[in-house]
Length: 164
Image (cartoon, rainbow, N blue to C red):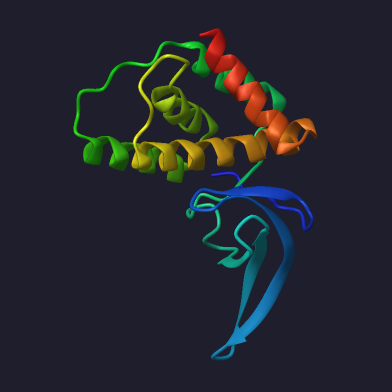
């Protein structure tokens, strides 16, 4: 597997927390051994995460998507969502797995499946929370890629959903 290099100051995606900034690479000595850690800050939830550099890729750390990757995301939003008949607890588990994968297309699928257009029934509290989390994660990544505000990114996503 090719080694992915991350640059200090760049934006990265950590699946469990979304988009963060790689602040530094720290070396720490423990029991006579030197370990290297990526120090990533997530401004939204005021979190600083230290990930061993040797475990970063297996933990799902990745670079931001590219503009061309986002084409697939917006295409995914344009497909009609399938009405799921499974119990909410099962669907919530599935959606959580997709959100925690950090994959932008999976995030788009969650958003598409939970999106309620005008005139449709409203989302339950749990559905709304899952929808908002997926929307926040995807909008943050889009806002950085396209150098726009997160609110603009949300509007773009919602526009694609309404066009479906």
